[in-house]
Image (cartoon, rainbow, N blue to C red; front, side, top):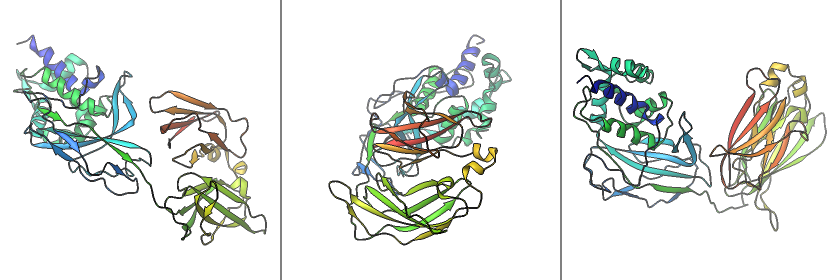
Amino acid sequence: MIITLPRLSFALCMALAGNLIGPATLNAQVQNCGLAAGSGGTLSTSQPTICADGSLWAPPTVSGYTAGLPNREYVFQDPSDIVYNEDSSAFGPRILAINSTGAFDPQAAGLADGDQFIVTAVTYDLADLQSFAQTLLNGSFLFTPCCTFAELVQGIDVCSVYNSVGIFNGSDVTGLGPWVNSILAFGGADALDNIIYSWDQINLQAGQPCTGSLPLCYATSTDLTVDIVCSFTCSTATPPSNPIHTNSATRVTLSWDPIPGSVACQLGAQRLTPPGPSPTQNLIGAAPTTTNIPYSLLGAGTTWRYRVRCACSITPTVDATGFSVWDTFSVPVAREMQELPEAVAASATLNIWPNPASTQLTVETGFGLSSLEIMDGLGRLRQVIQPQAWTDGVQTIALDNLEPGIYLLVARYEGRSGNPTETIRFSVQ
């Protein structure tokens, strides 16, 4: 009996932190507890594409399911965002959402036109999972709490980590969401493979003291991949609408509602006070909706108005709408970037447009920039940009060498004490 106690503690810790050891292979169907191969069923959908416009993707259909387990949840993942554990081992696509309805909003998950998501149905018995957590947190063996066994052998206060994510009793495990939170608390990554791996580690120690008559039974369906395609029939009959502005400490943000399917927009501005130039700015990309202009380009104490028009095509000819109504804004006095206190200038945030991008990306940063780096979804450095040619903190970067997908833009600064780097996510389509 005493020989099994260290194995018990090891199992309890690794069931939660087991994702720190190494990945298990997750096939299209995973079976356990005597379940037949393919018992998780096959997912299919009548909606293989959806637009990231705030609408919901319809729940998929599950056929061929034979596992007979009472609980089913759908796990949505981003195939272009591979997540890693503390030991740098890859554990598959990042989880975007988990729910029991099967409905999904790509826009709410941060996805855009050209992205994809994967959905997998996971069936299991929540009562078994709650029983395991309840035994770990409140059970005992030989008058010694199970938590004590785990802490003494592993040097980790397993139950306190559980408590840190709000799990004090088995009933606090209300689904896969809280279980994923416990995996994250142990330094694991939010990936479906980690959920399966943690359950497999529990099953390895089935029948040990404290854990009772395990194993945990589960089944996963086939994966289903859905493309995000936002294609519209573009019409120039109606101009863009709702031009507005938002002032910040260092810039003004101009926003509008473009016409669906437009490939470019053009701003037409006019300085009203004092009377002055009427510049234009072209924004190329899928239905651009916003742009940022530093105060240093506009002049302190000036008043401007702007309007916008959009185009359904720019080659071989421009097919554009009429201009929208005007929106008027003012630049605060003495708020140009070079006149700001050092602390304010150092807090300037990183801005990019358009996003998603196609062939180029316009970047605006704060003072003290030393370099920009572009990283792909696997964490590989793809491009380094030095800021020698920057004017007023704005520059256009060519993206010709990047494949469609999700990337990170990392700005590195010199002379900053609080935030020496800034990172922003963007996509290339």
